[in-house]
Image (cartoon, rainbow, N blue to C red; front, side, top):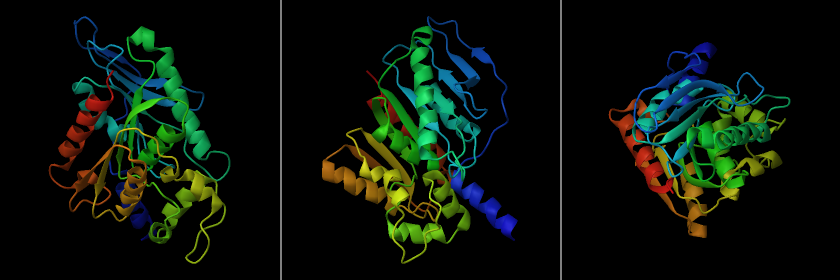
Length: 294
């Protein structure tokens, strides 16, 4: 029974379906002025998890939106293949994409700072190759789903690079919200993953103070004036939609630009209902093309 519950949790939390493993290759598909390219399993760091797929559309230039996409998986599992379809869709709309893997959080030495360090290394790699690829070297966009959305927010709001646009999908934003913590604490795997990400050693229980390490891991405390699109299902029982409303309340306080798209009846897997995947893809593509250019 425990194995069945864990499997169900993994499917819900990632909200994605994996694809077959691709070997490193370069695909040149057009004879246009600047050919489109797909680069698989590009190494951007020393760890075996430091790989990414790069999608470079044809006729790209320094104004073409360039998105770093971060997969979900509770900071402790998952793979870039979860978001291959989204990356391919954005690519088809003339958007450059880096679809990345990153080190998993653990109980010892890999926590949120190390995860964000991986993201920063990705941006450094993209900047270093911008002239070779004829792509931008600043003003990137970022996005992700679930824990990947959380990492996207934290990097956009606290990272070293200028971010032009964000698309976050059903991500946790406020670990100081005790109502959400109550829900998370009902699943030992989820609360353990939060503790690995934050480096917290004590399991939170109802009535206890919020751990100090939860506060600096909450994106609501660091919002910046970056146009953000928020996608969330109103029946999400893993990351409740109140987490998106917590973020929106902070954005409203600052008068920062945002848009919320609610997926009626959708749980943590936004794609579970007919038409939702295309709705998610179209919304993300439109947002990046509107705010990620120039």
